[in-house]
Every structure is written in C-alpha cells, then in structure tokens.
Image (tube, rainbow, N blue to C red; front, side):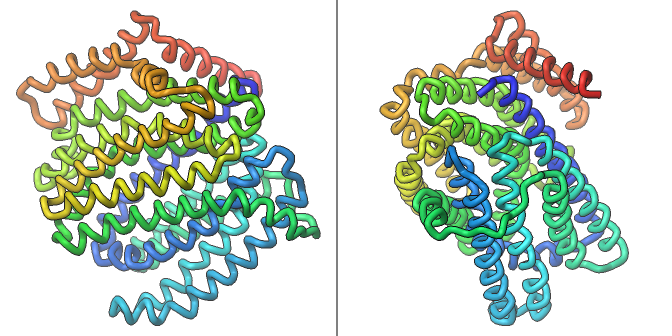
Amino acid sequence: MNSKKVLTNLIWRFLERSGAQIVNFVVTIILARLLSPEHYGTIALVTVFITILQTFVDSGFGNALIQKKDADDLDFSSVFYFNMVSCSVLYLAMFFAAPFIADFYGVAELTAIVRVISLKLIVSGVKNVQQAYVSKHMMFKNFFYATSTGTVLAAIVGIAMAYMGYGVWALVAQQLINLTVGTAVLWFTVSWRPKLIFSFKRLKGLISYGWKLLAVSLINTMYNEGRQLVIGKVYTAADLAVYNKGRQFPDLFVNNVNTSIDSVLFPALSNEQDNKENVKAMTRRAIRISSYILSPFMVGLALVSEPLTVFLLTEKWIESARFMVVFCIAFLFRPLNTANLNAIKAIGRSDIFLKIDIIKIVVGIIALIIAVPHGTFAIAISFLVSSAIGVFINVSPNKKLLNYGYIEQIKDLLNPIIPILAMIITTYAAGCLSLSPFLMLCVQVPVGIITYIVVSAITKNESFHYSLSMIKRFFKKRGKDK
C-alpha cells in the first residue's frame, strides 16, 4: 500500500482523536463545575455493564471484515443484519435487567437511566459495519467529520442540560447524542448500504476469525474493570481517585496516538498480508514513528508531573503525580505492543493473538495479587512490571512469523533515544528553578519541545525527517484540494 496514503489517513485519524479529546476534556471541566460527584457516580454504576456488552458489538466481526481480503457486500450485509438482531437482544436484556441493577445498587433512578443509555448498543450495531467499511477502504477523513460533529453537538447539549438542572441526564444525553450523530454522519457520508442478502456460511467464516478477537477484548475489558473494582473494594474511594488521576493525563496522550495508529495500521497491514516482507517493513515503520511521537509526550509528562498536577488539580492531588510518572514509563512500551499485535491480526493469526493475551492477563493478575497488600502505588508498579513483561510476550510470535526479533525491535523503539536524553537533561535543569507551578510549566514545556526538535534535526533522526516530509505533503495536498 502507498505509504503516502497510509500516513495521510494516520494524520486524519490523529486529528479526529485529538480534536475529540480536547473538546471532551474542556466539556469534562465545565460539567464537573455544574454537576456533583454523585451524578458522575450514578453514571459510573451503569458504565461497567455497558462497557462489557459493547465489547460484543465493537469487536470480532469488524476486525474480521477488515482482515478478509475479498470481503464483499454479502459479507458486510450479513454482519450488519446479524449485528442488528444481536444488539436488539442485548438491549432487551438490559431493559428487563434494569430494575434488578437498580435494586442491586439501591438507586431507584438507575432503572430509567439503564434503559435509555443502553440504546447505545443498538446505535453501535449500525456504526460497527460502517466503521469497518471506512477502515478497510482507508477513508479516515470520514471519521474526522463524523466524530467532530458528534462531539461538538453532544458537548453543546450536555452543557445546556447541565446548566438547566437536568443533572445526571445531561451526561446520558451527551453520550447518546455523541454516538448517534457520529453514526448518522458516517451513514450519509459513506456510500455503502446493506443489501437484502444474507449468508450463514459467510458469517460462519468470519466468526472463525473474529471470535478470538472478541474473546481478547472481553477478557481485557473485564480485567481492566476488575482492577478498578479491586482498588475501590480494598482501599478507599480517595485512593482510587488518586490512582485514576495519575493515569488520566498519560491515557489522554497515549489513546490519541495509539488509537490513530491502531485503526490505520491494521487495515494497511491486512492489505499486505500475503507479503511478509511488506508487513515487516510497515510494522517497523509504525514502531519507529509511533515511538518518535509518543516518547517525548510520556517523558515530558513525567518530568513536569508535579507542577502540572498542582496547576490543574491543586495541591490536594499532588500524590497522583508519582502515579503519573509510573504510567508514563509503562506507556512507553505501547508502540511495540500496538504494531506487533496488528501484524499478528493482519496475517490472520487471531489464534496467536488470543493465546498471548491470555498469558498477559495471567501475568497481570499474578502481579496484581502480589501488589494488593502493599498499597495502591504498588498496584501501579505491578501494572508497569506486567506491561514490560507483556512486551516480550507480544514480540515473541513475530520473531518467527516476520523474522523480526527482540534486538531489532528494541533498536527501532529506541530510535529517538538521543533527542530524548537531551530533552531530559534540559527539562530537568529548567525544573531546578524556584518558580510557581504555572511559570515552571511555561519554562519546562517549551525548553523540552525545542530541545527535542533541534536535537532531532541536528542528529538527522530518520523518523523526524520522514514525519516532517509526510506532514508537508499532507498539507500541500490539502491546499491543492481547496
């Protein structure tokens, strides 16, 4: 596949995710001032169920359609109708389970909330196939318009309802409108429509590949939700809040970069699945570029964790700064994980994907069990340790499948090491000044950015020049289109 097309779609996906995150971040701050913690707590009680059920909708078939080289209207239409039926069943299950969920938590209002917010399941069933079609045909500009429109309209409605005193329903409306509007925009901007055709045989073939990815997503979702439940059960709500706040900012940056690369890389690799050399070359490029982009964010965030925490969250959240450092270090491994797992999926080895994920979950659970008696910071360290071990587990299959081993991959991951070291030295030195948190950020952040870019240019870092040339081509092409 044309590398120019891949990077153009990557930029569109990154712009989409970044724009959505920025708007949501601002909206979260505004809503937090208008609504009480109880409102957020009420939504959180429901979210765990919706998150798990939505895994059934979002995983498996979508990836199977992207991975299948000759997927046609019969495949897409069969999945579409199957999704609509299964999502309707899931919604009915939540509709009738709503009173029991409300009784379980002792919150009568949850019955109506569960029944309304569960409509997301049906909307997601429609969006899932459209999303797969857009991804398979590398039309990520459509995602940008759909997500931007949905996010902005949902923000306006959510803030207006919160201001008018609708409480928790402002959060319900924000989530539903965001998903519904985004789905509607995709529906009207993508030419594909379901045909009146269906094949159980085609569906069975897609299930043989997709069920393993569904199992992986389901296991991961339950594992991640379980980690939160353990902390909340064993320790106090304040301890959980500090832990989550420490992860919030690293998550913001990582999800933007990782989601962008993940959604573009998988269809790009799937198109080259029969050529292992091309798959390896694209995987290497993905690791080098994502490492070059992600590393300065994570290292820089770790270096300014204290002044950033005090400035944005006030002194009472200062303890979360050390958690932030741990998560920043753990997320430095993400480029290896994302690229390797996408390569394994793209060449059709979802069986390997499932096996290594089960091994990683077992490692994570063992690390969590060992850490729980020693406090929440030990739990954060256990996440870092299990993430590091997970890298070696993820890399292992591609040593054989792509002839892409540990040493070669670590070298690609460390390609920005010189600019990073220079950035650490200058940013740390700037942090030694006796300044207020705000002024400290005003000094450290520009110093770190300038150092990273200048040293990258001086050392002729290949990823820097490659990214720069592709960005120039992207905006040059946009100019011509206008």
